[in-house]
Amino acid sequence: MELIQQYFSDFSPKQLEQFAALKDLYADWNSKINVISRKDMDNFYEHHVLHSLAIAAKFEFTKDMQVMDLGCGGGFPGIPLAIMFPETTFHLVDSINKKLKVVSEIAGAIGLDNLTTQHSRAEEIKNRKFDVVISRAVAPLKDLWYWSKPLIQKNKIALAGVPNGLICLKGGDLAQEIHESGCKPRVWEIEKIFPRQFFVEKYLLYIPVR
Image 1 (cartoon, helix red, strand yellow):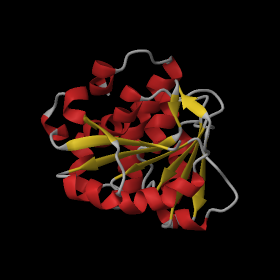
Image 2 (spheres, helix red, strand yellow; image 1 turned 90 degrees about the horizontal axis):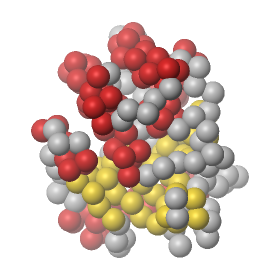
Image 3 (cartoon, one colour; image 1 turned 120 degrees about the horizontal axis):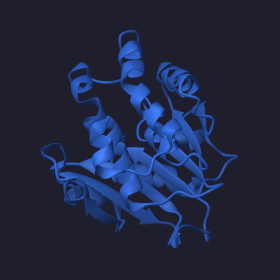
């Protein structure tokens, strides 16, 4: 928890309580439903919470925005971002229902009322549009963009003057993956945002919808 406060400091008492409660809640649920690698639990705040908040280091989600977390798994990056931006609505989507149960239970336990879940594949969502789609290491960029683009509202400036789009967290050598996607994302090295060994070769990517 102290690690998060090294990089972000403007939290309300409620937000601090919510972040502080996450590790024990995930440890408890992880013993029943494996949503996080066991070895990662020792580094929970760095590997999952701070990693998710790399998005918050570059993007400001505002009141009444609609954000979808595509393939949210156990709730990352959606849950940390929903804590960070309590006036933004987050919709977490995954094709594995037991993971969404964990998300819903944890959100309920910490009083996170700006978060909803949906058991679905992204391509099956037809009746909703979002300002932004976020994702963490779910699929190749080509696929993420193919699934996301139809779900993103166009021609609406939402992110502090930045057009709506896809924001995703990825790792490794991305040159071939970016080439195959046909996209030209803006790319940030997370190690330069959070100078820690874990974030070497981890990246934040942004593709706008114009």
